Length: 396
Image (tube, rainbow, N blue to C red; front, side, top):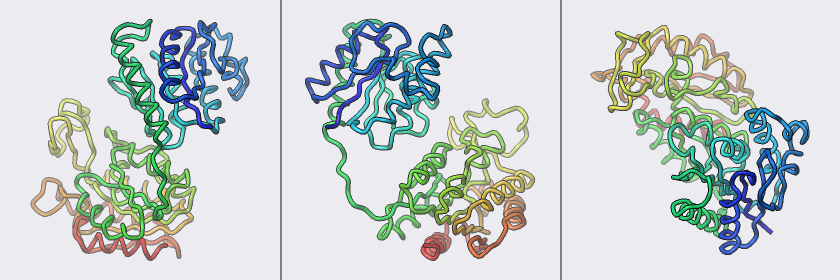
């Protein structure tokens, strides 16, 4: 029987946990109350902090009894991650926390499979939530008031959280036998191309399009590592430019790592590698003064990449793709790599593009399973999209 796991620090959040337990049991039924505190509990729980701590790689002694609170929180986070990963009866997980509790809970919840309901009511649900959520589908609900005893606001927030979790856990998404899933990467400036490719392949594949904002590429590769994808059409590799040049939407050093680990078929291109993303104009680092910028909106400033930068980007991508044992086909759009990189547009720069293309050709090692093809089209031309779809069909 599936259960809702309710987790929090029973030393400091006992009133809130007790209320949530009543609400969840009334609405759903089976609830397992878990203590992730590092001090004596003020509430009886189904799973004690000591039981959770025992899931730490070095055992409970590495968690409990630590005098440094920061170290204790970090250690309990590791333990909770091990604990929650060991459960096979999860209908959903709901937690509550301030700074420390949220850190503990999110460390475990981030790694649960996509689709498993996961929600944390937290005082940290504003500002930069990326460290807590990562690339998961974890929901953070603002606590509004501090979680320091019940009041008229917190009772309402906790009630809503309980009803939301009970609804998700009690009515899981219906699993539909579907077509093989493939991951595609897209940016606003490559939308026509990727939309056309997805339309071309949708009859035979479930097309999962990821926004290439740093988290998009990471999410796509996590799904591949999890066995949920059967291939890639990685048209928009712009996150690499931000990673290498200091933009705000970067990939990580592991970009293309899942392609290498899984050996899945990969068709890709150089979409939006003509740009590096920054925030408002005043946030652009001083070292880039005098560069060519395009103000996409008040919050987004784009910087054109130079020939030297493009050569660096091309070499980095080629070296990573050389590590991929599966079928790889890199497509070069000689007519331009984004909407802004076309005749008459702000970033049109054939010399910079050619530096990118030449570096890729120079460093990519051809093999029976690894090839590069130049196409005399802009990346958003229908002929390029058709060629990409055909290339993918040929690989599989």
